[in-house]
Every structure is written in structure tokens, then in C-alpha cells.
Image 1 (tube, rainbow, N blue to C red):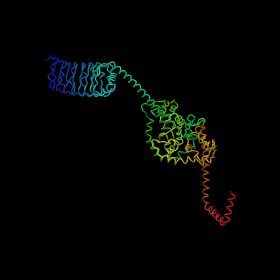
Image 2 (spheres, helix red, strand yellow):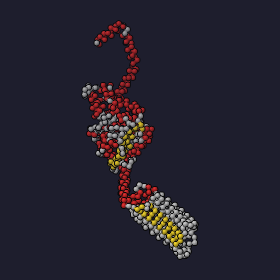
Image 3 (cartoon, rainbow, N blue to C red):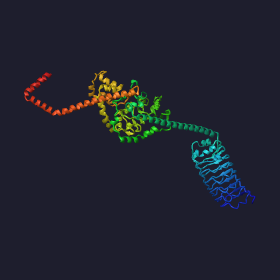
Image 4 (cartoon, helix red, strand yellow):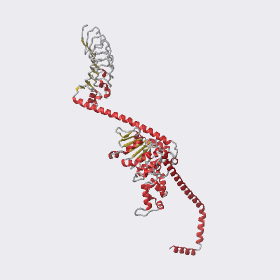
Length: 616
């Protein structure tokens, strides 16, 4: 018995391994299909090469410390939860742990002779350490819990695996499963017990190329996103610098005069005496007055400001973010212009260059939203005529951090072709803090029939309220302003219209200014709205100093004109008060004179007949 080399005790009811320590020549021990719960009793079998303990009740791998010669270890269909106490088996060639409760592949270092590893029907979700087995040729992982190819990443590092099974895992249900495995395990000859064909390898090659292209595209997208982020950040920093300059107290004149946007390079209208292109509905825009004291006239409305913050948050997200198919039109260190579907986003002053590029008819026609950020509004105004021509379907404008601070600036928006929605975010646009800004937009851009302003519906009550506030003022300005002042305020198209009525060019005779005032309809309702114009005359000077001087002269002239109007109104009021005091006595004298005159009726009739005869 001591020289026994093979012992087969399979298919019995053995519960413990005992009385085998004297079998020092034993090389093969088969205890398959018994009731053994632990491995105690084999620790002295140092000559053992094959140990088969499948289909038992073993919970833990142990007692293998002296079995250095072991080449085959079969522990399938047991209750083992962890791979342990096997790293010293340097001659082990076959390890079968299928049908257990193992959740992770571990402790394989040292198994340099292992050629076959069977881990089927376990609970494995991530495969690791397999790449350390230099001689591993066959790996069986069927029916586990592997969901993605990322959990099999270590297989790509193995240069020896030729047979692999992954069927029964969720990953095997993926599209291009076979090709993805072949891309990962280059030397594979058999997958899921099926031979790998040349066609399979060709398809795997196609998948590899697609994957490489995808990685390159992903890398390119990552670089582009970083450039985009830096461009927006730098544009924001430059904008903060511009705002800091605008907030400095001016040395000669107002902030508007000292700002760089009022220089020739940023002149928003009528450079070299040439007017901008006007829309058929509305004229271009000049000052009705200096409008320097708008902030004093229009008190801030905190409620409207807070409501706007919430109503246009969706539009802010529209400005800041984009979908995956964003097309960059212009990108530099300090500006960004990108097209995202029907939305054109412009960050920074340099982004306005994108409006000068050649636009295809179909591409331009698809643009319905333009969003501006970190660009001074006065620099945007000169582009509005080009926007009108290039983007015929534009219906929504968004302004965020554009320094819209005065109501007349909003009048410049009348130059676009159509407008259904307008969003002016409170951030960086002080005009939103004014109480009447929304009413002004509704009145001034009445011909657009705006549907929403900052996400809020424009109702008929809003239109009526705006008309009450600004309608009377516009009518008085259109009918009472002297002819010379009207011609100065209006641009060429309105000047020609007014001169046509005054001078009688055409078939009908000319009208006097008094007749025009008596019949305001001839001036047209649009004229009263047109007098609320975009302030551009201060920007026509050849230098900031000249613009400051011209602005001061113009302010002085307007102040004198207003003083004269106030004096006339005061004199008229004084005369009215005097007449009110004298009227009772005057009325009594008139009645007394009439009574005295009619006392002799005959004489009164004769005198009256004589007057009538003389009149004829």
C-alpha cells in the first residue's frame, strides 16, 4: 500500500479525508463526487500530482502547502468563495474552479506553469491578474457576471491565450462582441468553442480601425472643449476689464463718451456720413435727445429684475452649453463663434467676424437663434443690418453680459427682419433694472409683434400699458417738434418722407408744418415710434475728444431748447391763470353790453340787417 500511486474513490459518501498520510508515493487522488467539506488530510501527500475534489462541499482552499509537485487541481462544483493558498504551486498546469461562488480573480502570481484556468459558473464581474500568467493558453469564463469589455482589459495584455469562452455573460450580447474580443486578444484561435476564421479577423481589423478613429475623434473633441473653455474664460476676463474701464469716473464727459466702444473702430452707426440699411417697417436710429438722465427718470424695479432671473435661465443654458454636433466657426484665445443646430453663439468681440464669413443659403436659413455674450452692445449694433440680410429666419436674440444700459439702445433691434422672442439677461445688462424697459421694447418694436420677452408672454394688456406710457409722448414729439429738429432726428428714409409731405413733391400740393400738426396721420404712426432712436451721433466724431466736445455742444443746445419750451409753457400757464381771474368781470361786461345794445329792438334789427348787407 505504501507504494500506491493512484487512488480512485469517486462517487462515494466520504465526508473526511483521513488515513492517507502513509501513501508517500501517491501521485493521483480522485475523490470526485463525495461529501467532503474540508481539505484536511492531504497535507502530507508531497508526491501528489493530480488532485480531484470536484462535486464536494468544500468551502475553502487549504492544506496545499507541501504539494509542490501538483500539476492538476480540480475543485469544481464546490462552495469556494475565494481563490487563495495556491500561489506557491509553481508546477500547477490545470486549475478548475468552475461552479463555485468566486467573485474576483486573485492570488494568481507565482503560477508560472499554469496553461488552463477554468472559472465558469461563478460570480466574477472583473477579470484581473490573468496577464501575469505567461504560459496561460486556455481561459474559461462562461456564465459569469461580466458586463463590459472594460472588465476584460487585462486580457489584452496577455500574449499567450489562444482559447477563451465568454458565452453566458452579459457582455456576449453586445453588438460586435466577437470582433471586440479579437481586437482585445490578438492571438486568439478559438472563442466560445468555435474556431476563429479569417473573416472574423478581418472584421476585427475593421473594428480596430473604427475604434482608433473614434479615439482620435474623442481626443480631438477633448482638445476642442478645452480650447472652447479657455476662449470663453479669456473672453470673460477681457469683458471684466472692459466693464472696469466703463465703471471708472470719466475725466471729460460721461461714461459713454469715454468708453472705447464710442471710438471710430466701434462706431455703431453712420460712419463717414453713410446711414445704415433700414427696414421697410422702421427707420434707422438716432437720439431724440441726449437721454443722459434716463436712470433718474426711470426708477429701478427689483421685482421685475428678480422675475427675469428665473424666466430666462433656460436661455442662459442655451448660451453656455451645446450639443455634441457643435460646429466651430471662429475660435481664438479670446473669442468663440459656434453653430449648434439652429443656434449661433458668439463669445467675445472677435466672434463678430463670423458674421462676415460666407454663409450658405441653407445654413444661414436654419439659424433662428443668435446669442451674444461678453460683447458690448454698441459693437453689436453695426452688425444688425448684416444679420437682417444673412439670417432671414432669425426669430430669437439673446443678450448676456453685453452692457445694455439705456432704453434707446434697445431701439436698434428694429433693424432685424423679424423677432418673436427677445432675452436680455440681468447679468451684465443694467437696463433690465429699469421699471419701464419691457414696456419700451413692446412699444418700440411693436411691428415685430413680440411673443415673449425674457421667457414671459407678451399679453394685450402689456401692449396697452406700453402704449399708454410711450404712445402720447411719441405722438407729441412727432407733431410738435419743429421741422428742423425732425430732420436732424430722422435718417435719410424718414427725411425723404417728411420732405415729400412738406414740399409737395408729386401730384399733390405741399403742406405746411401747421397742417401736418393738425393731421398727424400723414406722418404715420411709425414716425412717433421712430423718434425713440438708437443714440449714435456721439459716435461719429473722428476722435474720443472730438466726440466729447460735440456731445457737450449738443447737450447745451438741447438744454437751451428745453428751457425755451419750459418758458413758453410757463408763460402760457400764467396767461391762463390771469384769464381765469379776469373772466367773471369780463363776462359780466359782455352780458351788460349785449343787454344795452338790444334794449331798442327796432334799432337793433336795422343795425343787424345793415351789417349783413355789408357782409354780402
